[in-house]
Image (tube, rainbow, N blue to C red):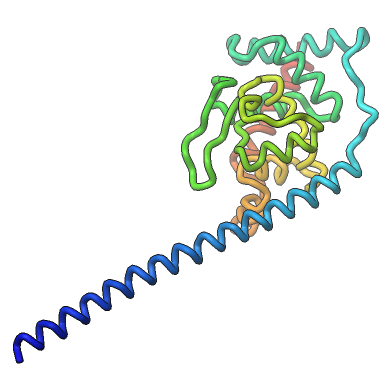
Length: 232
């Protein structure tokens, strides 16, 4: 009887182990399917947003010329001085010109890059590992976001290009322009840049506002730059 009892208990244990393993595999599969669904929904939302943005974005953009070059150069010099030389003047001129094309405050873009890189403006920066992946370059784009932003900007996409400072700057300007068109205010646009569009909505629901510390810091610093410029 004792032998049968131990055999019975052993069978119960084996069945329990098999059940636990099967349940874990089932749960893993469910989680994978949920993740795949979220990725498909995100991709669909990105395609719809891109189509909408392409319908409204201006094709009549102003490029640098003899009339505004000195203004671009002065702005670039302000970037260089503020960054203690970490932000190159050529980057600054390019950034100011790209921002001008899209009628975006160049200091918003500059301060965003400062925050994203921790004041280093390192074009080779690789962000920490997260559940969504890593962020790359000066503008800290992830590989699931960068391709469709490049598509919006009518630019080719290659992972190595994320480490090109000019390419990175152009992507950030186009993405900010897209987000500002989408939300029509900088609190939501900047928080969406930082947290993703769905992340911004979640933050807004939880806090009653999209005015995150990230968005507030960038806007405040940008205004301080303009105050200094006007005082000169």
